[in-house]
Every structure is written in structure tokens, then in C-alpha cells.
Image (cartoon, rainbow, N blue to C red; front, top):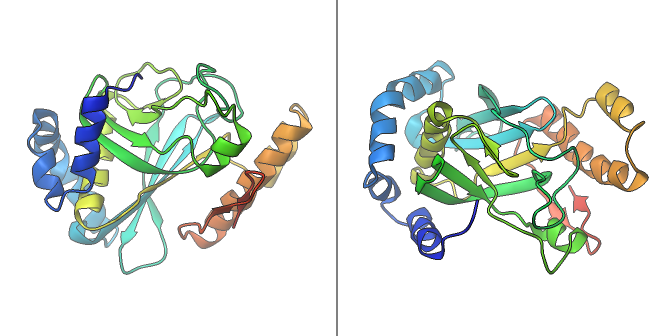
Length: 243
């Protein structure tokens, strides 16, 4: 997905607007999504004892299983609960992180939503902050690539497509969370569900370098599975994640 400077500048302005949802409603695709999906979203949140005006969300993607999970909570709570699960419509690349421009890889690691695009070529899209601090150390520094989105449609080159229908929901959950004051929406991307048995299986077939990287990811995976809280993440001088 190629960057159009003007559009991204507009999207970043929208992200930090004091009237975020009103700015989003200027776009017909957002208005249409609200008409179609608001009742579904509100009812789902009510069934989970979450107020839409208090909404915080977090997303987890699993590349091998082709699943995007959406977790939510009230902003005053600590514990997230899974409220939705979406199929990823198409895979790109192989297991393993994105390390350079044009490698077709979906990133692996710990990210945040940084761009809302209500006029996307892929209906609606949410851009993550790839390359993050770890990627900038471990990747090909001169050509890391970028423009990684969760988006509509069923095609992709290194992104996470979930169909036009489902991106309406994910986009609106993100809009309502941001409008309610959530400053960053975490997106954790794992190669697979990193249970002990899965990890033991996959580590037979991949390089020591990749397994060591995945060990870092597994630490974060395990912490979230145990606590269901947003991870506190730092990156050391070698690009390793520290929790």
C-alpha cells in the first residue's frame, strides 16, 4: 500500500483532533459504517458490560491461524476481554518478521494504531507504527518499508485484510475508543498462537535467529494470556523486547 503524503497528513490530523468522531463522520464510508454497524457494536459492548464512551481496545493478530482478535475494556478497568474474532482474508509472505521493503512480510511484534484512513483504497484502513523501535534496529536500516495496515478487501501485500464488511466494525471500534480518549490502540502480531506445544513444534523447522526472536514474542504472548492487561514494553540496544 503506497503512501500518499497528503492523505496521511490529513489522517494524522484526524487522529489528534479534539472532535475526532465528528471529523471521521465527514467521510461517507464512516457514516455508512455507523448506520450499518452501530447497533451491533453497542449491543456487543453492553453484553460485555462495557460502555461505548469508556471503550478501550486492543488487537491481536495470528498469522498462521489467520485470525484477528479484538479485546475491549472500560478505561477504568485493567483487564481486557475478547469480544470479537475476525478471519484474515488473505495471507502474505511467510512466518517471520518484516525486515525490509518489498519482502511481502506481515510484521511480527508489538505495535500501535497511528493512522486512520476513512478514504482508503481498501475501503477503510488502520495503519500501524511499523517500523517500530525493534524493527529499526533489527531490520535493513536503509529500506525498512512501511505502510502496514489493517484494511478491507481480500487482497494484500504485507498487510492484514479482513474484508470490507468486517473492517467497518474494527474501524468503528477504533474510532469510538479514540474518541473516548484512548491515546494508543495496541496491536500485537504473532506468527502463530504461541502456546508451549505450538512453539515446540515450530522451533524444529526454523533458524536459531528466528527462534530467539520468537522467544521474545512468546514472553509477551504468555504475559498477556495470563494477565489480559496491556503490555508494558521497552526495546533494548539490540532490538530485543523487554517486558
